Amino acid sequence: MIGSLALAFCAGARGQVLFDATKAEMAGNADWVIDADLHNLNVSDGNGSGTLGTGGLESNPAATPTPAASKITSTTSETYWDGALSTWAVTLVKDGKSVSTLPYNGSITYGDASNPQDLSHYKVFVLDEPNILFTNAEKVALLSFLYNGGGLFLISDHSGSDRNNDGSDSVEVLNNFLSDGGLNPLGVTINTNDLNITKSSADTSASDPLTHGAAGTVTNLTYHDGASLTISTAANSSVKAAIWTTSTHTNSNVMAAYGTYGAGRFVIIGDSSPADDGTGDSNDTLEDGWNESGAQNGTLITNASLYLAAAPEPNVLALLGLAVLFFAGARHRSREIFPPNAIAFLTGIRRCVRGRGQQFQPIN
Image (tube, rainbow, N blue to C red):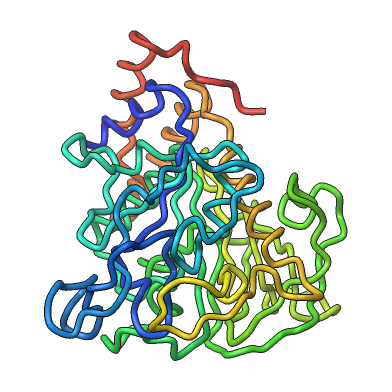
């Protein structure tokens, strides 16, 4: 299977953005979905990502939002779809991206030809406040997707945000993924705190893709019960901060971070409030953080999404070099979660070069 990871890029550019709904993102007073016509899921302790039946009131998003995205124009309202992330999704469609959902009963995989929603079919994968721990197989899939040129958008919430009451909040869920095996490959840890920030400090550099992206300039990101981040350039030399909680910029008071891993890009923020557009499941109390006065929350999230979607497809030589370097390091590790097996990866690269290798684009 791992050999097929390299082959995913032989199929050409992947333009879709996939929003996850397998990790109870709609549990409790949350509705982190782009659209849902049904609200019949029971998402609480013991029900995993959701079950249908008695007591089911939470959003049950389908893979494809309705009405059709093809009908969206420059003047379409975000209420065209029904979800607290509908503004985010409609904004991306207006920018030429396609969006879809991995439903509650879907599977997070990479390189699995039997899964029609395998991550190899997408350019960006969004995990907005996941509330269920990832399995080892899912961790492998996420890191493989990222390592091979995918874009991963991770959003946490504050410490104690265990919305489905299964004993693990979004901070623990994401830290369990980010630090599994003690390797911290992305160089980011989510702090166990609960912050309300109405005035933050943004990176003023014109080269920052989150604060100075295609959607506009960001000078303020707000948190309403969120968690700050700690970044480590020792663990990942590419990781950078875009927003800090105060004008004193340290590596431990970060609000939004970004970087690369392998050929892919990642963005991490510590609060789900900025993406909330205030509409969606009528059973939840939602607030409009996307359009919050005095902040540019929606602009930052759009910039981050476009940054992830614009990651160049890796070329063969770059992937060969990465695979050799990681294989050398993997020989000394007791666990092989990070990264995928390099020999199988090299085999896939060789097959790609013999076949449709001309579709690889150089890394800028």
